[in-house]
Length: 377
Ligand code: MG
Image (cartoon, rainbow, N blue to C red; front, side, top):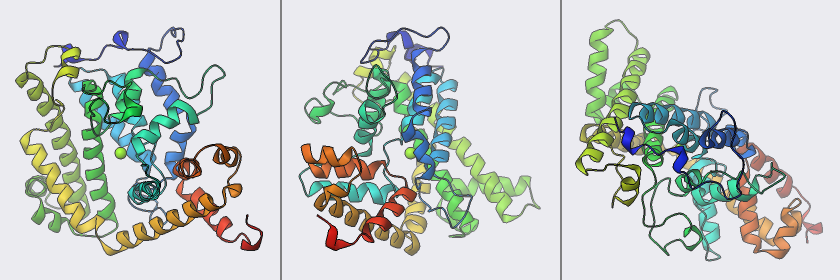
Protein backbone atom coordinates (compact mmCIF):
# COMPACT_ATOMS: atom_id res chain seq x y z
CA UNK A 1 0.00 0.00 0.00
CA UNK A 2 2.75 2.43 1.02
CA UNK A 3 5.60 0.31 -0.30
CA UNK A 4 7.20 3.41 -1.84
CA UNK A 5 7.45 5.01 1.62
CA UNK A 6 9.06 1.95 3.20
CA UNK A 7 12.39 2.66 4.87
CA UNK A 8 14.87 0.38 3.09
CA UNK A 9 17.46 -1.24 5.32
CA UNK A 10 20.07 -0.52 2.63
CA UNK A 11 19.55 3.22 3.13
CA UNK A 12 20.34 3.04 6.86
CA UNK A 13 22.92 5.49 8.14
CA UNK A 14 24.45 2.48 9.83
CA UNK A 15 26.03 1.84 13.19
CA UNK A 16 28.31 4.05 15.25
CA UNK A 17 31.01 1.33 15.16
CA UNK A 18 31.02 -0.29 11.70
CA UNK A 19 30.46 -4.05 11.64
CA UNK A 20 30.50 -6.69 8.90
CA UNK A 21 27.08 -7.80 7.66
CA UNK A 22 25.45 -11.04 8.74
CA UNK A 23 24.81 -13.79 6.15
CA UNK A 24 21.04 -14.03 6.67
CA UNK A 25 19.89 -11.34 9.13
CA UNK A 26 19.66 -7.76 7.95
CA UNK A 27 20.77 -4.86 10.16
CA UNK A 28 17.30 -4.16 11.61
CA UNK A 29 16.75 -7.86 12.37
CA UNK A 30 20.04 -7.87 14.25
CA UNK A 31 18.99 -4.73 16.12
CA UNK A 32 15.78 -6.49 17.15
CA UNK A 33 17.75 -9.50 18.39
CA UNK A 34 20.18 -7.31 20.34
CA UNK A 35 17.29 -5.58 22.08
CA UNK A 36 15.67 -8.90 23.04
CA UNK A 37 18.96 -10.12 24.51
CA UNK A 38 19.57 -6.95 26.52
CA UNK A 39 19.27 -6.97 30.30
CA UNK A 40 17.12 -3.85 30.24
CA UNK A 41 14.64 -5.72 28.04
CA UNK A 42 14.40 -8.63 30.48
CA UNK A 43 13.86 -6.22 33.38
CA UNK A 44 10.63 -5.04 31.74
CA UNK A 45 9.04 -8.18 33.12
CA UNK A 46 9.29 -6.85 36.66
CA UNK A 47 8.17 -3.29 35.98
CA UNK A 48 4.63 -2.09 36.51
CA UNK A 49 2.58 -1.07 33.49
CA UNK A 50 -0.44 0.39 35.33
CA UNK A 51 -1.64 -2.23 37.80
CA UNK A 52 0.75 -3.53 40.43
CA UNK A 53 1.23 -7.29 40.34
CA UNK A 54 0.15 -9.13 43.44
CA UNK A 55 -3.51 -8.19 43.12
CA UNK A 56 -3.85 -10.47 40.11
CA UNK A 57 -1.64 -12.75 38.02
CA UNK A 58 -3.36 -11.57 34.87
CA UNK A 59 -2.42 -7.90 34.67
CA UNK A 60 -0.05 -6.66 32.01
CA UNK A 61 3.46 -5.82 33.01
CA UNK A 62 5.77 -3.70 30.89
CA UNK A 63 7.11 -6.74 29.03
CA UNK A 64 3.72 -8.15 28.01
CA UNK A 65 2.64 -4.60 27.09
CA UNK A 66 5.74 -4.33 24.89
CA UNK A 67 4.86 -7.61 23.14
CA UNK A 68 1.33 -6.31 22.49
CA UNK A 69 2.70 -3.07 21.02
CA UNK A 70 5.07 -5.05 18.83
CA UNK A 71 2.29 -7.29 17.52
CA UNK A 72 -0.02 -4.36 16.72
CA UNK A 73 2.77 -2.27 15.17
CA UNK A 74 3.95 -5.17 12.98
CA UNK A 75 0.42 -5.88 11.79
CA UNK A 76 0.00 -2.23 10.80
CA UNK A 77 3.46 -2.01 9.18
CA UNK A 78 2.89 -5.18 7.22
CA UNK A 79 -0.57 -4.10 6.00
CA UNK A 80 1.00 -0.81 4.82
CA UNK A 81 3.94 -2.70 3.26
CA UNK A 82 6.41 -0.79 5.42
CA UNK A 83 9.57 -2.23 6.96
CA UNK A 84 8.37 -4.74 9.55
CA UNK A 85 11.88 -5.41 10.90
CA UNK A 86 12.52 -1.76 11.74
CA UNK A 87 9.02 -1.49 13.23
CA UNK A 88 9.54 -4.55 15.41
CA UNK A 89 12.94 -3.40 16.69
CA UNK A 90 11.45 -0.03 17.64
CA UNK A 91 8.36 -1.51 19.28
CA UNK A 92 10.47 -3.85 21.41
CA UNK A 93 12.72 -0.96 22.48
CA UNK A 94 10.00 1.64 23.06
CA UNK A 95 9.69 1.21 26.85
CA UNK A 96 13.20 0.00 27.64
CA UNK A 97 14.02 3.26 29.46
CA UNK A 98 11.05 3.09 31.82
CA UNK A 99 11.89 3.36 35.52
CA UNK A 100 10.12 1.30 38.22
CA UNK A 101 6.51 2.17 39.16
CA UNK A 102 5.46 3.37 35.73
CA UNK A 103 4.56 7.04 35.33
CA UNK A 104 4.71 7.72 39.05
CA UNK A 105 8.38 6.64 39.03
CA UNK A 106 9.14 8.65 35.92
CA UNK A 107 7.43 11.81 37.18
CA UNK A 108 9.20 11.58 40.55
CA UNK A 109 12.66 11.08 39.02
CA UNK A 110 11.98 14.09 36.83
CA UNK A 111 10.91 16.11 39.88
CA UNK A 112 14.07 15.10 41.76
CA UNK A 113 16.31 15.98 38.82
CA UNK A 114 14.57 19.34 38.42
CA UNK A 115 15.93 20.29 41.86
CA UNK A 116 19.38 20.19 40.22
CA UNK A 117 18.27 21.94 37.04
CA UNK A 118 18.12 18.70 35.06
CA UNK A 119 15.44 16.40 33.68
CA UNK A 120 14.53 12.75 33.54
CA UNK A 121 12.91 11.50 30.35
CA UNK A 122 12.46 7.79 29.69
CA UNK A 123 13.19 8.12 25.97
CA UNK A 124 16.53 9.82 26.65
CA UNK A 125 17.23 7.26 29.35
CA UNK A 126 16.56 4.49 26.80
CA UNK A 127 19.20 6.03 24.56
CA UNK A 128 21.72 5.99 27.42
CA UNK A 129 20.91 2.33 28.09
CA UNK A 130 21.45 1.17 24.52
CA UNK A 131 24.44 3.49 23.98
CA UNK A 132 26.39 2.81 27.13
CA UNK A 133 24.79 1.00 30.08
CA UNK A 134 24.38 -2.31 28.27
CA UNK A 135 27.87 -3.82 28.25
CA UNK A 136 27.73 -7.04 26.23
CA UNK A 137 30.23 -6.59 23.43
CA UNK A 138 34.01 -6.63 23.61
CA UNK A 139 34.40 -4.21 20.70
CA UNK A 140 32.08 -1.36 21.66
CA UNK A 141 29.99 0.03 24.48
CA UNK A 142 26.23 -0.42 24.32
CA UNK A 143 24.39 -2.37 21.64
CA UNK A 144 25.70 -0.43 18.63
CA UNK A 145 22.21 -0.24 17.08
CA UNK A 146 21.47 1.22 13.67
CA UNK A 147 20.94 4.97 13.45
CA UNK A 148 17.21 4.71 12.62
CA UNK A 149 16.53 2.59 15.71
CA UNK A 150 18.29 5.11 17.97
CA UNK A 151 16.53 7.96 16.20
CA UNK A 152 13.15 6.24 16.56
CA UNK A 153 13.76 5.78 20.29
CA UNK A 154 14.48 9.48 20.92
CA UNK A 155 11.62 10.58 18.66
CA UNK A 156 9.15 8.08 20.13
CA UNK A 157 6.53 10.58 21.13
CA UNK A 158 7.78 13.88 19.74
CA UNK A 159 10.05 15.53 17.21
CA UNK A 160 12.40 18.38 18.07
CA UNK A 161 13.96 21.36 16.37
CA UNK A 162 17.72 22.04 15.95
CA UNK A 163 19.25 23.20 19.25
CA UNK A 164 16.13 22.35 21.23
CA UNK A 165 17.74 19.30 22.86
CA UNK A 166 21.49 19.82 22.33
CA UNK A 167 22.47 16.25 23.26
CA UNK A 168 20.24 15.00 20.41
CA UNK A 169 21.62 17.21 17.66
CA UNK A 170 23.01 14.09 15.89
CA UNK A 171 19.50 12.74 15.40
CA UNK A 172 18.27 14.92 12.53
CA UNK A 173 16.45 17.62 14.48
CA UNK A 174 13.75 19.33 12.46
CA UNK A 175 13.08 16.18 10.43
CA UNK A 176 10.41 13.53 10.93
CA UNK A 177 11.54 9.96 11.71
CA UNK A 178 10.72 7.20 9.16
CA UNK A 179 7.07 6.16 8.97
CA UNK A 180 7.91 2.91 10.78
CA UNK A 181 8.99 4.93 13.81
CA UNK A 182 5.95 7.20 13.60
CA UNK A 183 3.64 4.18 13.93
CA UNK A 184 5.01 3.12 17.30
CA UNK A 185 3.53 5.92 19.38
CA UNK A 186 0.02 5.22 18.05
CA UNK A 187 0.41 1.42 18.28
CA UNK A 188 1.45 2.07 21.89
CA UNK A 189 -1.80 4.00 22.46
CA UNK A 190 -3.92 1.25 20.90
CA UNK A 191 -2.19 -1.34 23.07
CA UNK A 192 -2.43 0.49 26.39
CA UNK A 193 -5.89 1.98 26.02
CA UNK A 194 -7.42 -1.41 25.24
CA UNK A 195 -5.23 -3.35 27.70
CA UNK A 196 -5.85 -0.92 30.57
CA UNK A 197 -9.57 -1.22 29.89
CA UNK A 198 -9.24 -5.00 30.00
CA UNK A 199 -7.16 -5.06 33.21
CA UNK A 200 -9.43 -2.54 34.94
CA UNK A 201 -12.51 -4.54 33.92
CA UNK A 202 -10.92 -7.67 35.45
CA UNK A 203 -10.25 -5.61 38.57
CA UNK A 204 -14.02 -4.80 38.59
CA UNK A 205 -13.51 -1.07 38.44
CA UNK A 206 -16.59 -0.61 36.21
CA UNK A 207 -19.22 -2.57 34.31
CA UNK A 208 -19.32 -3.07 30.53
CA UNK A 209 -22.49 -0.95 30.50
CA UNK A 210 -20.61 2.00 31.99
CA UNK A 211 -18.03 1.88 29.18
CA UNK A 212 -20.86 1.75 26.63
CA UNK A 213 -22.54 4.77 28.21
CA UNK A 214 -19.32 6.81 28.01
CA UNK A 215 -17.81 5.69 24.68
CA UNK A 216 -20.25 5.59 21.71
CA UNK A 217 -17.88 3.55 19.51
CA UNK A 218 -17.66 0.93 22.25
CA UNK A 219 -21.48 0.93 22.56
CA UNK A 220 -21.90 0.26 18.84
CA UNK A 221 -19.45 -2.65 18.87
CA UNK A 222 -21.03 -4.02 22.03
CA UNK A 223 -24.48 -3.96 20.47
CA UNK A 224 -23.14 -5.93 17.50
CA UNK A 225 -21.60 -8.48 19.88
CA UNK A 226 -24.93 -8.80 21.74
CA UNK A 227 -26.77 -9.49 18.48
CA UNK A 228 -24.18 -12.02 17.41
CA UNK A 229 -23.88 -13.78 20.81
CA UNK A 230 -27.22 -13.28 22.58
CA UNK A 231 -26.51 -15.84 25.33
CA UNK A 232 -22.97 -14.66 26.09
CA UNK A 233 -22.00 -13.55 29.61
CA UNK A 234 -21.07 -9.91 30.34
CA UNK A 235 -17.40 -10.87 30.38
CA UNK A 236 -17.60 -12.68 27.05
CA UNK A 237 -19.40 -9.74 25.48
CA UNK A 238 -16.83 -7.36 26.93
CA UNK A 239 -13.95 -9.39 25.47
CA UNK A 240 -15.64 -9.74 22.08
CA UNK A 241 -16.16 -5.97 22.04
CA UNK A 242 -12.61 -5.25 23.15
CA UNK A 243 -11.24 -7.43 20.35
CA UNK A 244 -13.35 -5.51 17.82
CA UNK A 245 -12.12 -2.27 19.35
CA UNK A 246 -8.46 -3.23 18.81
CA UNK A 247 -9.38 -4.11 15.23
CA UNK A 248 -11.17 -0.78 14.74
CA UNK A 249 -8.18 1.19 16.06
CA UNK A 250 -5.53 -0.78 14.14
CA UNK A 251 -7.58 -0.58 10.91
CA UNK A 252 -8.11 3.14 11.58
CA UNK A 253 -4.36 3.61 11.91
CA UNK A 254 -3.69 1.75 8.65
CA UNK A 255 -6.32 3.70 6.76
CA UNK A 256 -5.57 7.06 8.38
CA UNK A 257 -1.86 6.76 7.60
CA UNK A 258 -2.51 5.74 3.99
CA UNK A 259 -4.89 8.70 3.59
CA UNK A 260 -2.44 11.17 5.17
CA UNK A 261 0.35 10.00 2.86
CA UNK A 262 -1.92 10.30 -0.18
CA UNK A 263 -3.22 13.72 0.93
CA UNK A 264 0.28 15.13 1.44
CA UNK A 265 1.40 13.67 -1.90
CA UNK A 266 4.42 11.99 -0.32
CA UNK A 267 6.34 9.81 -2.77
CA UNK A 268 9.29 8.28 -0.95
CA UNK A 269 10.92 7.73 2.45
CA UNK A 270 12.99 10.92 2.03
CA UNK A 271 9.85 13.01 1.65
CA UNK A 272 8.42 11.39 4.81
CA UNK A 273 11.37 12.93 6.65
CA UNK A 274 10.99 16.38 5.12
CA UNK A 275 7.21 16.51 5.56
CA UNK A 276 6.40 19.28 8.10
CA UNK A 277 4.17 16.94 10.12
CA UNK A 278 3.92 13.28 10.98
CA UNK A 279 1.92 11.14 8.59
CA UNK A 280 1.03 8.27 10.93
CA UNK A 281 -2.53 9.04 11.97
CA UNK A 282 -5.89 7.54 12.88
CA UNK A 283 -8.96 8.11 10.74
CA UNK A 284 -11.33 10.58 12.44
CA UNK A 285 -13.57 7.68 13.58
CA UNK A 286 -10.67 5.77 15.15
CA UNK A 287 -9.33 9.00 16.67
CA UNK A 288 -12.67 9.61 18.33
CA UNK A 289 -12.85 6.02 19.69
CA UNK A 290 -9.29 6.27 20.98
CA UNK A 291 -9.96 9.63 22.65
CA UNK A 292 -13.17 8.27 24.18
CA UNK A 293 -11.36 5.31 25.71
CA UNK A 294 -8.62 7.57 27.02
CA UNK A 295 -11.13 9.92 28.64
CA UNK A 296 -12.98 7.02 30.26
CA UNK A 297 -9.73 5.53 31.59
CA UNK A 298 -8.70 8.86 33.10
CA UNK A 299 -12.05 9.31 34.81
CA UNK A 300 -12.65 5.77 35.99
CA UNK A 301 -9.26 4.12 36.30
CA UNK A 302 -6.18 6.34 36.54
CA UNK A 303 -7.84 8.78 38.93
CA UNK A 304 -9.49 6.09 41.06
CA UNK A 305 -8.46 6.34 44.73
CA UNK A 306 -6.53 3.02 44.97
CA UNK A 307 -4.39 3.88 41.95
CA UNK A 308 -3.81 7.45 43.10
CA UNK A 309 -2.75 6.22 46.54
CA UNK A 310 -0.43 3.65 45.03
CA UNK A 311 1.19 6.28 42.79
CA UNK A 312 1.64 8.67 45.72
CA UNK A 313 3.19 5.97 47.82
CA UNK A 314 5.56 4.95 45.00
CA UNK A 315 6.54 8.59 44.35
CA UNK A 316 7.27 9.23 48.03
CA UNK A 317 9.49 6.15 48.24
CA UNK A 318 11.37 7.03 45.04
CA UNK A 319 11.93 10.57 46.40
CA UNK A 320 13.19 9.24 49.72
CA UNK A 321 15.61 6.69 48.24
CA UNK A 322 16.85 9.26 45.72
CA UNK A 323 17.70 11.81 48.41
CA UNK A 324 19.18 9.12 50.63
CA UNK A 325 21.65 8.02 47.94
CA UNK A 326 22.52 11.61 47.03
CA UNK A 327 23.39 12.22 50.69
CA UNK A 328 25.14 8.86 51.15
CA UNK A 329 26.72 7.99 47.77
CA UNK A 330 28.98 5.52 49.59
CA UNK A 331 25.92 3.27 49.95
CA UNK A 332 25.65 2.92 46.15
CA UNK A 333 27.06 -0.35 44.78
CA UNK A 334 30.05 -0.54 42.43
CA UNK A 335 30.55 1.12 39.97
CA UNK A 336 27.91 3.75 40.83
CA UNK A 337 29.68 4.79 44.03
CA UNK A 338 32.87 5.54 42.07
CA UNK A 339 30.97 7.39 39.34
CA UNK A 340 29.15 9.42 41.99
CA UNK A 341 32.52 10.65 43.25
CA UNK A 342 33.49 11.84 39.74
CA UNK A 343 30.20 12.89 38.17
CA UNK A 344 27.15 14.74 39.50
CA UNK A 345 25.87 12.34 42.19
CA UNK A 346 22.20 13.10 41.40
CA UNK A 347 22.71 11.93 37.80
CA UNK A 348 24.32 8.68 38.94
CA UNK A 349 21.56 8.08 41.50
CA UNK A 350 18.93 8.79 38.84
CA UNK A 351 20.47 6.26 36.44
CA UNK A 352 20.73 3.68 39.21
CA UNK A 353 17.12 4.01 40.33
CA UNK A 354 15.78 4.29 36.78
CA UNK A 355 17.27 0.90 35.93
CA UNK A 356 15.63 -0.87 38.87
CA UNK A 357 12.70 -3.25 38.62
CA UNK A 358 9.87 -2.64 41.10
CA UNK A 359 10.97 -5.65 43.15
CA UNK A 360 14.64 -4.61 43.24
CA UNK A 361 13.60 -1.12 44.28
CA UNK A 362 11.54 -2.55 47.14
CA UNK A 363 14.43 -4.72 48.36
CA UNK A 364 16.92 -1.87 48.14
CA UNK A 365 14.56 0.53 49.88
CA UNK A 366 13.95 -1.92 52.71
CA UNK A 367 17.65 -2.67 53.12
CA UNK A 368 18.76 0.98 53.09
CA UNK A 369 16.01 2.29 55.32
CA UNK A 370 16.92 -0.45 57.84
CA UNK A 371 20.64 0.41 57.62
CA UNK A 372 21.82 1.79 60.95
CA UNK A 373 21.95 5.57 60.58
CA UNK A 374 24.79 5.97 63.13
CA UNK A 375 27.30 4.32 60.74
CA UNK A 376 26.16 6.20 57.65
CA UNK A 377 28.67 8.60 56.20
MG1 MG B 1 4.47 1.79 26.00
